Image: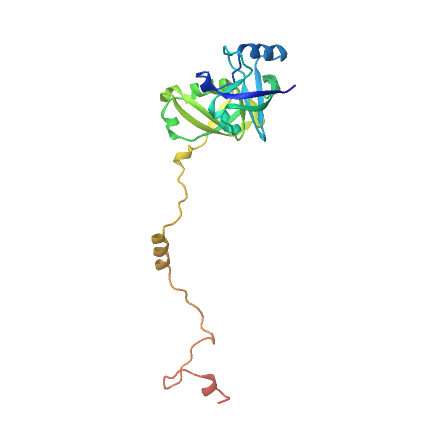
Length: 226
């Protein structure tokens, strides 16, 4: 059974939880009592956009709200100020365990720290990864710097359960190290034109013929019909 819930940013509860969805205590108890599973995953849909978020630790709140970190709200295209969403709850057992994950960091700063172990823990916190999604992970080894990752490949399916210490994690080159193709400036275009050799065309009429006195041969004047 699905339910309709209001989405609110975690800034309204001053939470440092960046990886999961958060419910008030009473709502959290209702959801965990109604659904079996060692860990619950929320399938959250707004319009034509859907994300997956693991259920986190409850907060003291007497509302029926769902709180999400801003990077998840961004993927849904909402601000987190009470927008309504359709929420379905699933057990983590409904998703295949990841065997391979390929990530592409947006910032090469990620490579400057020994981040592999920390990233494995972070992916376990997120719980569910979907190919094509974007993650925003604060890295303690980088002083809390938030690294953005594109989820490029997930195997054996496009939505997988991430247990960081049991999956092969690979990385593509960071986006900020890939040189963009810049359009040529007007000066560069002019230089290219000036450097190109002038085209040599074949004159109509074929080879140039000269008369014994040096005049150019004219078929109307010097030909057999003259």
